[in-house]
Length: 537
Image 1 (cartoon, helix red, strand yellow):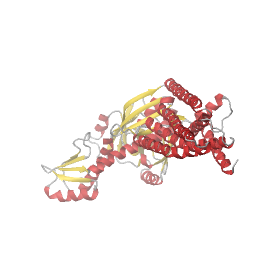
Image 2 (cartoon, helix red, strand yellow):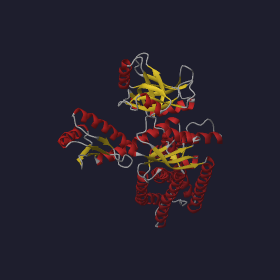
Image 3 (cartoon, one colour):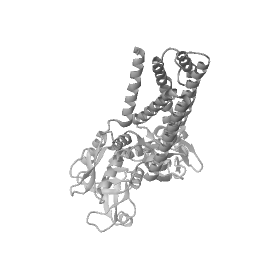
Image 4 (cartoon, helix red, strand yellow):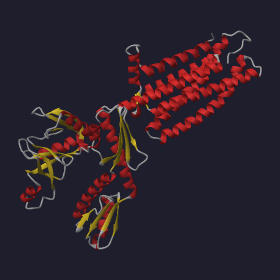
């Protein structure tokens, strides 16, 4: 055996061992059940094989635009006050369909230049235009509007992905849904409590800590009566939970509009228990948020603060001493699971816009098991039929082809195990197609060798010429198919991407097995034959 042949054999055996490890890892034993258990841990199954939930979410991007224009209105009010620009009304005439538009009425003509300068200086993302009856329209620039909407989708996608990952869902798919505008596709394999996951995904969980200015009130009317029918300009009424021991289901609190702390100031949130042993959520603020909170609580010792979650007062507490960077959310009779979910949502950040569910499909585990059985049965039957055909048609050379095909399959499954790529039913179809491409490569090589033998070439020369002449055709067919698979991966959805991944890597593996491994086997067979002995092909 030559030194070159020995190195080729070592490469083949090392490749085999590496990818077998990718399939099984280090199993607990060699029994069938233990090997299957190791296989399930290494290769992730998709929604169509494992069962689970398929969702299409609509992101209400106008919510994000409304937040931006609401802030712009406050900036305009403050600026016009400072610049002594009079006006009668400032509002958004159609926040549902055109949230990017702000209308200012009753601006004196002599203040037009000052208003235009104010918009240019304070709101560079907006443009202003004068209208009839001393009115002005301040509109978000089209490029900024499109960017705000797209950013809302990306932030929603990232937030939803963070929440799902923290729930422990294995191999979820969260991506933009290319078939609709501002939509997100979510696939959750193996989820046994889809209602909880949907609730966690959809919750906005906007946390704010505000100063409590009055309350609790039994109703909005009683709060207005106490303030002579008019609330302070810097205050707002929010609903909240009833005080401990109260029989009332809901009460109202007067709180400041300005927030001492917002959700973006959070560094961490974890489930815990309050002083009464009830489930609660402890949160830690960032350095900047902690400094702001310390300044706020230092100025309001003996006052009360309100912990507001999604515009609802969750808890009211008295400030006994300055607080720097820690707080707790309790009350509301939270269960342990609700505390865990709330902590998770706060850690992952608030959604930038509301979402709704356009489509929901559930694939049961039994249907997934049926798909696995059908897919595996098709793959096994097809593989066995091909192996038998190669043995019958190409005799002992068919053994060569069968070994290469089996190694190709091992490499492909090992790749799935190493990369954590999700195997779907279309992915199994990609595996079967890879086997077909492998057979095609061997047929090209073997038929070329037969042709060379018929032309009177010796077996070593026929093998050499067969591989050399077939190589160009094999590379051409594989490259064109790989390019097609890459296009499918770039523009396809989850199952189509699974097909593209298995097909692409299977073709790369096939180039190795059909060209390199098959040639090594032929060289080994020829080295054991006497000069002039025929080749079984």
